[in-house]
Amino acid sequence: MELTSYPKNKINILLLERISEKAAAFFQQKGYTLVHVEDRALGEEELIRAIPNVHILGIRSKTQVTDRVVQAAQKLQAIGCFCIGTNQVDLDAATQSGIAVFNAPYSNTRSVAELVIGLAVMLMRRIFDKSTAAHQGGWLKDAAGSYELRNKTMGIVGYGNIGTQVGIMAEALGMKILYYDIQTRLALGNAVPAPALDHLLAESDIVTLHVPGGATTNGLINKNTLAYFKPGAVLINCARGDVADPAAVAEAVRTGLLSGAAFDVFPEEPERNGDSFTNPLQQVPNVILTPHIGGSTKEAQENIADDVSLKLLNYLEKGDSSGSHTLPALSLPLVEGTHRLLHIHNNVPGVLGEINKRLSENGINILGQYLKTNDRVGYVVLDVDRNLSTQAMALLRDVKETIKARLLY
Image 1 (cartoon, rainbow, N blue to C red):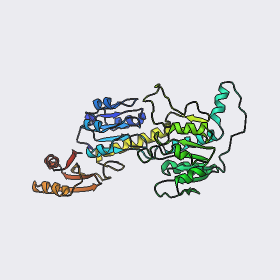
Image 2 (image 1 turned 45 degrees about the vertical axis):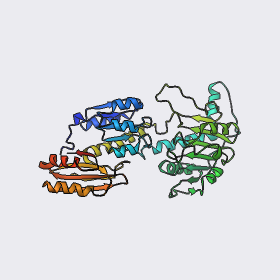
Image 3 (image 1 turned 45 degrees about the horizontal axis):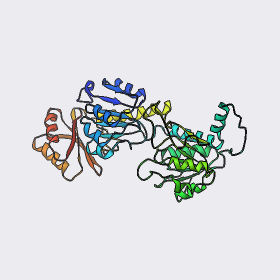
Image 4 (image 1 turned 180 degrees about the horizontal axis):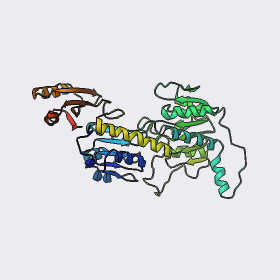
């Protein structure tokens, strides 16, 4: 069965930000020849100029898909976020435009968790300062201020996919695990939920952040919350740059409230390799700064490429919206001998009735129909007789509240 009515050699796929080469190879192996790859993120104006003829867009965390970009993306069917988060995409605008948005919420979990454990060891042993001194000809052989992880308490703020993985690995090293999450989460192993954030901060030797970015977590670790920390604790932020205030943390380390910190994410990050980087945490003792590399392992990037590319292909060729953050999830079998039509509309009463009425009045037999809604949009997949699909498509596009309609195959 031909899985798309639109010629594959006319579907434009744009992949930005050093997405694993496996993604481009995957689409090319499936017959898509117009795959354009950029090693960098595009700014808003650049993306607005590039997006009008793009059908599939692949990004990581740097490219910002704003409302202006969405409005310029007249042919865009789906956005693949080849990373954990989707906060770089205006999801409201994408929803209203009928654009499916996918991500890879699990694929780099192990890589980030391993980095957190490694940073914890280095901070507790003050490895970074001792290594720097040795490179400069110094010799800091001293046990003062150096500790094992065993029997220490790891406080995990955000007990989701990465947080739970960190907890499992830390417990295997003999640590006690305390976690805090705004949602009720099942404890793994011997982990214990904290009744409140300030309780976790006061009891933890190491605090590691694993919460999403956004208004509810912006500035979560600040001058006020730092006052709750256990004296001499260390802080690790591999979550989002806006979650912790670097200036406040730098001051806490200098004054001895914290004994160290490690940051992999920052409120402002360079757009590309080679650009200058400044941050208040620079030159602070026992502070490790890494350039947003939590998920930057070959294994993680290949897993992400496999995951997101398959989701994009399934949506493009089958109408499968499983895992979308903007469309209701529908996963359907292919139906031989039919044409499949997709209809995305504002979720208001009467749209499905209007669709069925129009098709019925024109003698179009519906061989299969599926509907799912969320609070914003409805998503209908229709299998109809091949001979009548063109007429049916025109009728669907004419239905009031239509956002987008597409003949799939």
